[in-house]
Image (cartoon, rainbow, N blue to C red; front, side):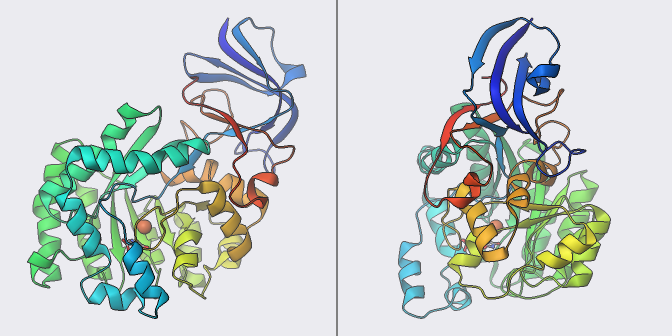
Length: 400
Ligand code: DI6
Ligand code: FE
């Protein structure tokens, strides 16, 4: 006896052993107690009774989508800064002039928990409407203990407001808070010795991230944060090589980071290091597009060395005000020339891997959490091909 059986569906299992997308033409998924107990051809299914049988009428089922890199929780917006950039100011100029991340910091500090929840839910609902069942959310717009705590608390609370799994990442090392007076090493000490332990004690940190970049923190400062995270037993990840090549990918690999993200300026050595350590390369085409970058991440190198590639929205107010993983897939295909198979695996299996959750989610396989996205499309390519069109039929999280 199972709880629910979805039958007469085309399955995109993205199962780890299968080739390509692990497509099954006439498939079925059975769920009991929130877990998949069968996913495969309907013809091979063992005899089972289901309390609820759903005829999918040939629709496509993928694993629930996973957005593995977002900055979803923040106050205000940066539409005005966008206008400035349209008149010629660069992202780095605005950042150096005290705009950019710090302007979002001010709005985030000023916002109450309730205001942040409300603003974040508007964005989250867009992602959910496109089949997202797991999301990673970073702090990094608070930049002091209270405001980072507030951001992570709000991020966690979204899990109670919607049927979704939330993972939280502490990104205190995102930008310099103005009160630190430009002393980056001092601020990094505060992060390591004061903020991180307090946030971990509050149970708010699943992973630790750093923005390693000329306008942010150096590789040496990144190492200090990573060393402290490791001492606390936390996984790390890195904003690496987005605007310049500081060899962030290799650094992330050295620490066996879950992921290294952005990677526009990563070289062949960096790509090789990621493949060797199993660190997922998370590509963020929304930021590439918004900043009109011209240097693409080294996709050919990543493929050649066999690195895992994921795609995420990077949803944030400055460089990627994007709340659509479907659009991110289209951008990754068009701008970075990822294949349809890479795009779909990139928002399911590989995104799950980037969060350290591959044992629980990301593929349609017995034993995994029953997180499904059911699409009104005839073939997988349609999920990548359209722009601004949402073919989601229904979404299932933990069997619900
Ligand atoms: N890289 C990015 O693209 C975002 N953060 C980061 O580390 C930008 C965040 C912002 O401009 O608000
Ligand atoms: Fe980011």
